[in-house]
Amino acid sequence: NRRIVLAARPHGEPTLQNFRLEEAVVPTPRDGEILLRTRWLSLDPYMRGRMSAAKSYAAPVGIGEPMTGGTVSEVMRSEHPDFPVGTLVQAFGGWQDYSVSDGKGLRKVDPAVAPPTTALGVLGMPGMTAYTGLLNIGEPKPNETVVVAAAAGPVGSLVGQIARIKGARAVGIAGGPEKCAYLTRELGFDAAVDHRSDDLPGALAAACPNGIDVYFENVGGAVFDAVLPLLNDFSRMPVCGLVAAYNATELPPGPDRSPLLMRAVLTKRLRMQGFIVWDFASHIDAFEREVGGWIADGSVTYREDVVEGLENAPEAFIGLLKGRNFGKLVVHVA
Ligand code: NDP
Picture 1 (spheres, helix red, strand yellow):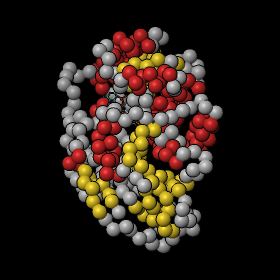
Picture 2 (cartoon, rainbow, N blue to C red; picture 1 turned 180 degrees about the horizontal axis):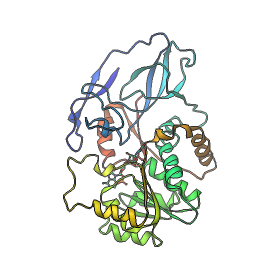
Picture 3 (cartoon, rainbow, N blue to C red; picture 1 turned 90 degrees about the vertical axis):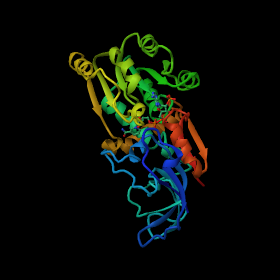
């Protein structure tokens, strides 16, 4: 039973030294429990927060403890009547080969309905984030302009595609020409902007001639600075993630721009709302039905970036925070 534990908390960008691969005994399930074998492990930006001891909406991983993470796992031994051996489940198995569960919070995965990895991406937590945050907070209307960054990833790519389904104009921001071409050619975004271009504010303004009505915030930093002047009166901003700052060790140097932001909030009557996907837990059936239907009829497509081998998870995770992934990052464990 290989497992990857948090060896030390990172200062700034995580390094390989923050992780340690260990051997542990395979746990034995007790009455009411099941033994799970990890098949696929999801790597997600929120894990950077779990590596930090800073106060957040969830408890940090302890030093020497296995990194937490969503998995698609197979039941290997069962002392639980609802989960016979061989059942595939969406679980929270962590960065390890085996885990034990009492069945709470597990969802069965039917490989006949969709490839199992989609339970970690477009039909899993990231997809649910896009669906609930955009529709409940962003509330896109026909002909409005919806902007999203990290647009080639699992959250952003679905935000843009749902915006289009709702009749809005979708503008994606992503790193590099390849990801930008993917957004317009394969996902049907109306425009794509490279956040590494020399003139991001100018390129974004050109892509949004009618301003921005919904900005789905995944990134923060320079991307947000380019978005702010373009926001229309009464625009909405689901604040989903701030990945540009996850490795930051201090606030950016002054001047303090919060008065600029607050003035925009006031004069443009902006609505900003942070959310965590499980705030909308009651929407999960509607999400699965609706997004499942859009995949089936071809109006939503997705891309996965599959890394081979648990031992390569740390390297892949470090790359995720820098945009080295192209699509939903998943580790094929076994
Ligand atoms: P992605 O697979 O899109 O990975 C993150 C991407 O962020 C990278 O690929 C990179 O793409 C982009 N990025 C990193 N640094 C920067 C930067 N400085 N400027 C611009 N882009 C940058 O991740 P997800 O789709 O899984 O997650 C997207 C966001 O949603 C994250 O902020 C995440 O924390 C958040 N999230 C929030 C949830 C919630 O409940 N609130 C739940 C799930 C996700 P590129 O190459 O395009 O730069």
